[in-house]
Amino acid sequence: MKGSLNIFIVYIFSMLIYGIFNANMQSVKLYEEAWTKAKRENKQLMVLGSPYTTSGKMITLFTRTYGCGDICIDMNGCGSCENTINDKIENVLHIFNPYGYVIFESGLLEVIDEKNLKYVVSELYRIAGTNDNIFGRHYIQNHRWYFQYFGKYAYSFLGEGRIQRFVEKYPPNDDYAFENM
Image (cartoon, rainbow, N blue to C red; front, side, top):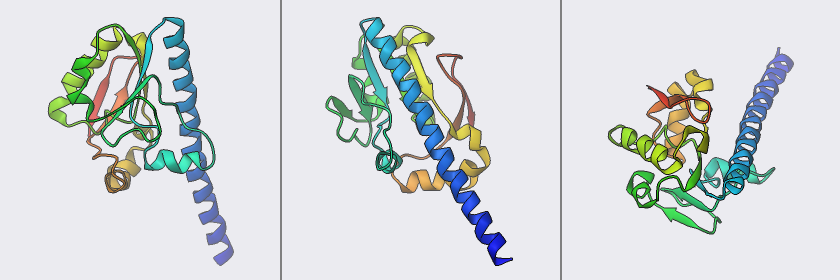
């Protein structure tokens, strides 16, 4: 019985690690697509959500994470990124010109205050110009049960914000659609 329990624990731990690394590699791939599009269209790449959050720092011990773009905005800073703004995006998006950027955003819209969500989304569309210039990466909705009952507390404890919603659909494939927790 004890051996079976150990095998089960190792299996669960392995699946958790695989899930984290798989989600990270999907983020890296999407970031690279956004970077390529920005350069092809002679636009700057705006990254919303630091690649060096607590979980991002852990991942970089073993592999790479997505990049900083030409400018990175996050309320907790963007670690070693060169061109950063340390602030909530709702406080700074208004300073950016329309149609001048390709946007890569990852895991940020889940934690935006409800009163600011509609404004932030409209600013993303304004700055990017089209859905095709927004590359959203959201994965917690795929692990709904975990994040509703456990993950939201870990997220908050790690200083990554308070999860308020799931991002059900997002650009470049869809318009944004949300479900509150």
